[in-house]
Amino acid sequence: MNDFSFDVTDAGNGKVLFQINNAANNGAIGSIYWENTGNLLSNMVLNVGNIGNVNFKNISPGNLPQGNKIAFIEAFGARFQSGGSKRINGGESLGITFTGNFNSVINALQSEDLRVGIHVQELPQGQSDSFVSDGGETQVPEPLSILGTGVALGFGILFKKKGVSGNKKTSQL
Image (cartoon, rainbow, N blue to C red; front, side, top):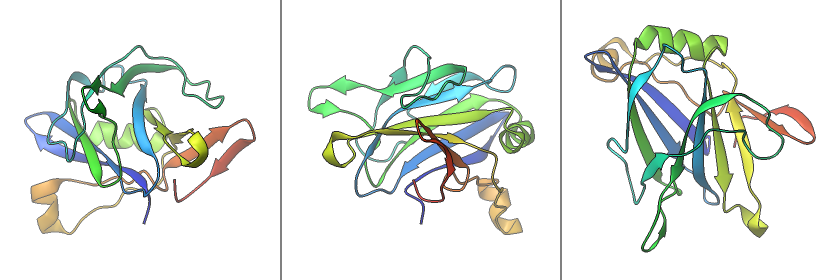
């Protein structure tokens, strides 16, 4: 099982739902970066159907930590409220909807015209790391599931780890 993943679902009425998931025992997703949303995605709504104590907001886009020099144009980060950070901890998820064409979004993810990056914090010994989607495979559910949920796209095999040591493809993040 992959620790960090996202599902992309056709939410109907021209909406696309991204569900960012954390199944890790260690580490919390503190920020999410989007590259080249261009005309693909607009009218973003954060915190849609979150699971757990998660709450994100818009932040200034920039580069991911650990040497990732990618032109991210949208970024979301965890809010700090009373009780601490609202990051995506183990067993939690964040939902984000956009106006967009589902098939175009899936094609852009597969061709890497649209990439998503995450910054994982609170790793052992105070470490953090970052990961960027890399196209991977699209998983298509059974025909009856497609009617209700659309097509799912997993992050685990889609991420390319980018750091000072270079690129390393990983299936568990």
